[in-house]
Image 1 (spheres, each protein chain N blue to C red):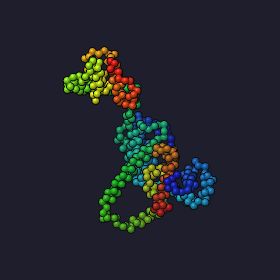
Image 2 (image 1 turned 90 degrees about the horizontal axis):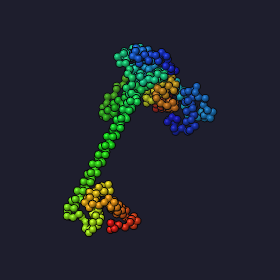
Image 3 (image 1 turned 135 degrees about the horizontal axis):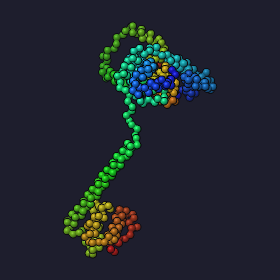
Image 4 (image 1 turned 90 degrees about the vertical axis):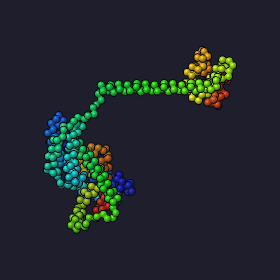
Length: 196
Length: 225
């Protein structure tokens, strides 16, 4: 996904919004909702959460439009907000999960109700497991957000190293390291599950 | 170099890094170097790495076909309509008048702190002097004399100064005013003599404080006064 420079239209639209014409923001929402949603969906794997965080991304972009440097492309700035919103949500979720696990560990007396065996679900799970692509997607979601975001931006959204550096606010050299380590971690997860 | 390859021989680590770069950015790299290419042909681990990476990157590139819900852009727009207009950042740049204002307050603050420190210092000196004078007066009252047994006025003065100098609270700073009030004025000493007395007394203290240098110090000339 080659990134567009800020078109004269976009520049005008942003100037209009800052001059008080709120409606000028609408074409930007229409133009970038799909990209932002796709990115968040690929990182979180949850459609509802992706919708919610896409909302949040645009609201923040609108609120902080004054801090946007109009000499730079708009899309990486917007995607950077999306990346930050997603990363903080994932952190929050992971803390919540840790708490639930620790409560379960504390209260686990051996009488915990295990879910009943469902043959249909088992068959469905087995079918899911057939696809190597699905396994990779699952492995991707087990990575820490910093690797997951880099891999999604590079391989699913087709951003360049420079754009990833800009969006993730990391040095250019770090992008390559994140990608190669990210791929290695996917490989490690798959190896642990014996899928590679 | 990735952390999972840390146990591999250096040539494998280098080759695998080259393979990754070649697969990830074929347009940027100039191809795998010859030495590594030769290694790749003979190394099973590196060959396996290349096969796995090709497969992994292909799988990673597959995107989720689900697109954004049709109503999403609309609902985002509705939420933005309810938002107030974006406001310019509130942290103002420091302008020249406000800088002057700031400096003015800083200068006032320094003056205030200076006055406070000066007053505290004066208060401290006054308190110390009063304490020493009280102690000396108590001693005079207790002994009924000035605390010396000299026969001449000079001897009496020297003894008096020595007596004052033994007070534990005495410091150089408050010695002079104390002697001025208690010795110089009552005995109507002139200023020159008074300074000589002080200087001699200070030599004496030095010899007490630094016994090793005692021999270098001049003899006690108090008798000559």
